[in-house]
Length: 215
Image (cartoon, rainbow, N blue to C red; front, side):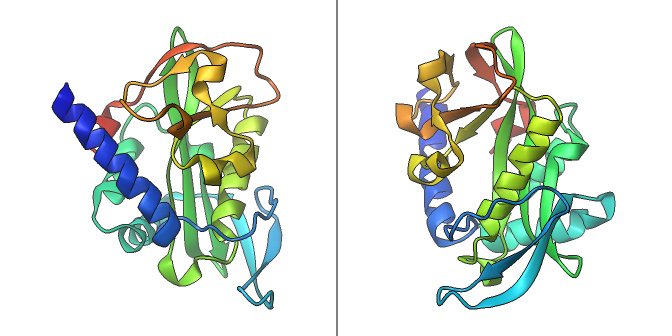
């Protein structure tokens, strides 16, 4: 409906603003596999902390929620993560956190997504605690999640977001692979990343898990 489309467009606007100003880290990309420690640096290039990425543990859930609550202006993203935990779309090995001394600094989530007659994964949401932003941690946790998806045998990742940010990971407009979304957004904001196992499918309309309808 027109109302739903307007809400989605508004969400995308907030999504992009949050990416730039709050929840998403626009610092330098750091390639990091799960469980690997890397060194992040501040805007002056001063190395000052070791950050490790790993699969989120059940005991991390409260800390992950706090990161999303702090990173975004409202509870929608935190509530979405909690709802997805209870949904069949949840993939435990594709919920990835960045930690320093086991303090959760950032979170990137991939969940099951139907595309046409096949399956892919959706990247959303991603958040970095405000005090840890602009240190490369957002890029680090996204790359770790994408690596996890590749290792799990996934073929295609879908994201709704800023092409200027996600192109650094290899995302391109979904239309180039005949993948369409349920939302009325600009073509270059609905993106896909074909992973090494991608063979040209799935293609078609994306059907997001039910919890996304409440966002």
